[in-house]
View 1: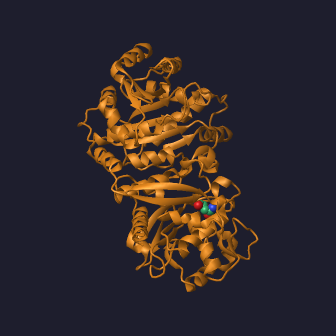
View 2: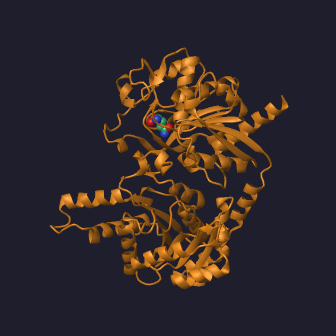
View 3: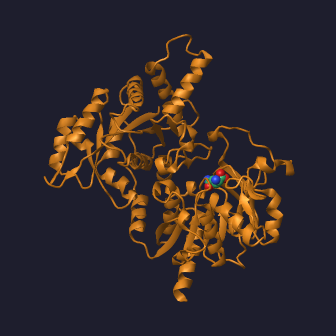
Length: 551
Ligand code: GLN
């Protein structure tokens, strides 16, 4: 029987509900339970695929090709269970499904309403996310409800989970509420009033929290904890202090020491062995005691908001842990870069160009790839970063001086990067992808496998086969591959199904470490082992750093 923990948030957003949910999941997993996480997003977009990274942060891609909220990245980095499409859904998806049913006549002429039709649909989606009715039973599904209690948008979600907990009967669901206690300097006090109000708001809807996670910039003194308990009807041991910490990996232990996992297991009548947190302790030890550092330039467009590259940042840091160094990431806005000021990249031990869309800032990224190639700086190009490396090589090495991607210049005479449909006539073996004007539906998404060429950097990292996740529309044009190969570019992996270019690199006889990948390796990096490609990139950057120091 799958049991549920519903996690809500109050007072303000950005309190770290995702990390709190993932940490609780990690604690339960360490007790030997099979756990999953589900994220409910109260906005009307069907998925975050079409939303600006400036607004919404990174779009996280799952193995099965779903474009999801970045919290799913935290989930996969914190627990063993892999996320699928069903682990994240939005109000938009719920309404889409309800309206499709209505058009099909499934409601048999009834008036379709938020209660019960929308709330029932939400419950079905939640159960599906928890794998109920499938062959893989989950012990506990932790359901994070996006938004803040009191928002109009999240009301149907809260009503749905209240009904679900009622329908399941006693001891099947627990409620955890994240709240915020502001520190008022003039009074020298942490204020509990907003917490009292948000818990009242929750009770109005019929939900009584079993635990309160009290976010604040400091620990909550016992006196305040008792006061909160009294006003909110939450047992004193359920009022848990969640002060700011210097690394997110400290959160599981912080919650465990105040008994959160014990409280949840009691509430859900789960009897398990005690939590085992050695690997979290070791991780914190590693994070707080680096033996060196390395400076990486991340040259991109959404540099103002580091959430836009969340998984890339995390993957770089994980690779730092693996190499026992701290990774200093400097964001360089590609729009400000040109041949005249590109020398500023000399300050870095390694250069990374992450994924991106659209023409803005792309010439700066091409200049960056050129700088890294000519100056023998380790270069990792991810998705768009691989495409700009290919364009740069075509222009400046292969003699195709006007090479471009049809994404940036639809009229280009030399489309070394293009949509498959742009060149399909030239190569009949490639299957045409579904023509679709729907922006959310034209991407190559999710995991795909490729064969890796022996004797390449890629082979040293991946072995014979690489399987990574994708999110892109454009591809290296097969019609130019021979010319690029003749000029010295190594195509080190091709997809098994369609023979599309998956990895390009320079031979190590001409450059120490220069790799571009069409996929997004960052989505599969974890703090435990890092990711082999990022580990190798950081290692090469450290070699470069040592060489620079010596010269
Ligand atoms: N804009 C490029 C494409 O669609 C690259 C996408 C990406 O970097 N994720 O192919």
